[in-house]
Length: 223
Length: 267
Ligand SMILES: Nc1ncnc2c1ncn2[C@@H]1O[C@H](COP(=O)(O)OP(=O)(O)OP(=O)(O)O)[C@@H](O)[C@H]1O
Ligand SMILES: [Mg+2]
Image 1: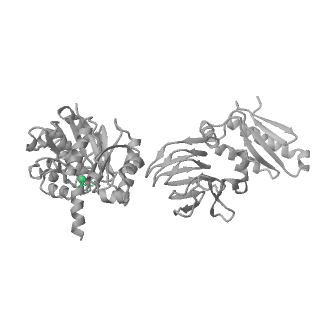
Image 2 (image 1 turned 90 degrees about the vertical axis):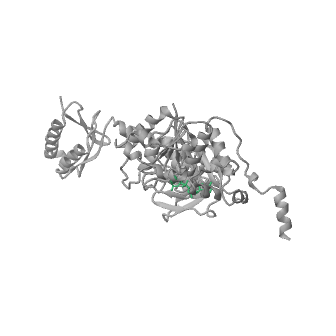
Image 3 (image 1 turned 180 degrees about the horizontal axis):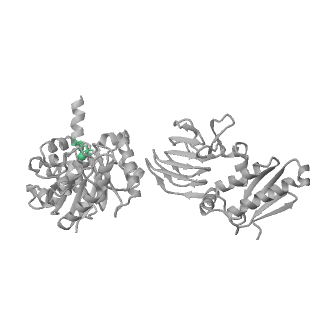
């Protein structure tokens, strides 16, 4: 059984770590392989060799990844391009699902309550004064907002908030926030709050979304 | 087996103690056996409002710590034969004098002997609040039409949603001044109830007589014709399951004849 398999294809070199080998075996084998490669005349010609590491159905801890990268770094011409795996942890999978999902929320968020999520939110509920809705993604609201909305938490300025926010106490996108005064924002449910090129919260209309956030505009099927 | 109801508000001074005393007295007048529990440790008032201050021997902390048996600490209100009792709060400033388990045990011990255990909650949402809701089956939220009171009521409803009691909380709007409500200076009953999104149990008008009577240790419900008294009697009947229509805000305006008199006076 070979602990590490070296493969070459048109994209470069791949190191496949046998999933039934122990990590100690793998490191030892890698070192042997690197030594051999470094001594080979053909490798002397190449400027640099960058490897993709595939761990099969094994998940390496960040310390283990670092060990592999450090090992490669001891050879002047070698480096690790990326380390990938066929599998992911349940936590990561859950977070991915959360990030990719649009959450539908229709509850009432009361004074002092804080609802914190990952991903985009379609909000149909009510936020009372002093209530907070916070997410890493965008917020699309068709609800009643008298509290605080925070999209792109903690610092993604490319996220936005869409909906009627003229009664909100505050609007936050990434690290930018605004205290909403009654007259500042239209009483209209097609208002978009976003961070502009000057890193200032700005407000636009839904029909301007294409200019404001082309990526999102394309994703939701605009053209 | 009785029902334990906590009377709470978040904000201080909105009428928790007044409501506890008056609803309890109204229920006793209806023939129910009622125990009023004062959980405002350190700032006990319920005894004063009921005129029972001088008769306190032991308090709830004595019971919790085994220095007294529960029946020894109960103060009987002689006006109602055997139907109205008070379990007084302690005057200690020690915030850890009582915990949730102790309160739960005491409420459980009271339940078989009473139809209602009404728990007067301290202001705030700290340990005292947690103690007060610990043993309760239901909650009555008191708010005035003032925004700060409404905010705090909202906060408390939110906390109760996260730690649900057996029954959904119900709302009493206290200290209503019909004139201000009609002028739109404060939120009206419908707006306020709708905003908080809980069932309205009743409304109580603002009346100087509340202060005067509680100074005499005589809950206002004993004064049959007072509008505040009517409000609390209606609330007690609704607790008993009766469907009683809400008092009209306009009813409180001076009647036609007294307004006529006013017109003449003005000249
Ligand atoms: N409907 C009313 N009309 C007039 N005065 C009232 C009314 N309800 C309560 N009050 C007065 O308001 C004051 C505060 O009432 P109370 O002590 O019942 O409030 P509380 O919520 O128990 O206060 P705390 O939070 O301090 O325990 C008292 O002086 C009381 O007499
Ligand atoms: Mg009180």
